[in-house]
Image (cartoon, rainbow, N blue to C red; front, side, top):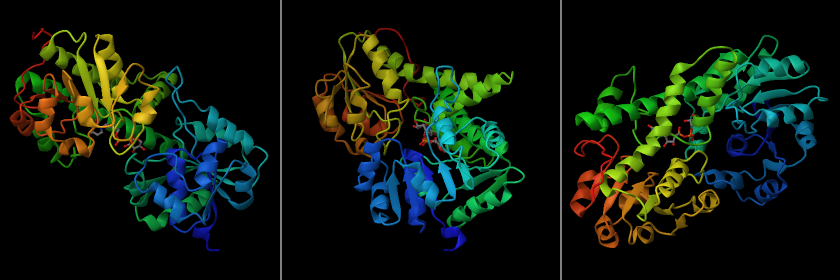
Length: 437
Ligand code: UDX
């Protein structure tokens, strides 16, 4: 077997683990993927994917011969030399990253000799060095993950860059991990472990900063009558700025940005450094969701007894992931104002149901809009652009929409008879808290 086709172990079959395992199998490797949740392993062994990610189910089924799932660590250790650790590192109550799952994997490998541990889980800078000190027999490589949910398979197969961190003594382990990624053609950044760990945290924090920045610009646009879409377009053409992640809206969510921004802030704080900028990034993101409530009050006055529809619940389209979704805060805030909250999402309803107590769910957008006093577009699912908005006007008690993603065409909506308001879009005036009725 050639070096680049050696069997690979993947530990933790969540989003990152499953995409990584399936894509390595697609590249021709034999992959043994291990998870401690038996039901997940059984479902995957039957070819049933546990998450909604475009193209992933097909990849798992197509590579069934090369891709096996197990609950037993020994099954990996017997066949694979390189082990990709993909367990989650959720935030703790203190805002630091919870490394307990990483630690239990490390404990399981304690007795083990000749393996390369490739860390894909997002860990604070310094974690790799501590593991390496504790387990000198393991070769350690930091290989952070940059996948976006909803396009994870594509991102994996066509990476902008692959970051591989290895410290002196582990260079050949770094070479082995690099060889696995080489066929993908993205630039491979070879560096030390601490820098690789920081690249991941800094990249996510920077992207989150871009979003909070453009959201603040949007809020100022509302005050001065400018259009944030135009402003972002004009800014983005400057190659030093770039056009991506300048979409204003109701803030970022998901499993990575909120957690990683907080983890970086805490990591800095734990060393005695006060990362002021990230405090603002987090605060702007929190307040941005709440501005929607202010906008609704500007139109409706009191929200008590008003029927408000959330169009979309997932933290972004093409996923059923509800982690840190803006809809969670929004629904609770609206309920706090006494509103009756109803919702529709094309795929996230089942995941969302338990997390949104008191919310009434519909299986179509039009059904949810029936009799509503207002709608808030929370997730930019393509089907909302295709909706028959003229028909929707007739169904709603008051055709008012706050477009939290600047996704819909204001002219079309206004022509259909809607009161339309986006985030920082021209022609809508400043938000007001004054009662409109
Ligand atoms: C992110 C990173 O992009 C990825 O590199 C990392 O590995 C994991 O975290 P993901 O969480 O899947 O990926 O979603 P992403 O597409 O980056 O969007 C994150 C959030 O930011 C979403 O809520 C999205 O709606 C929001 N967003 C994104 C904006 O509000 N404006 C933008 O311009 C871009």
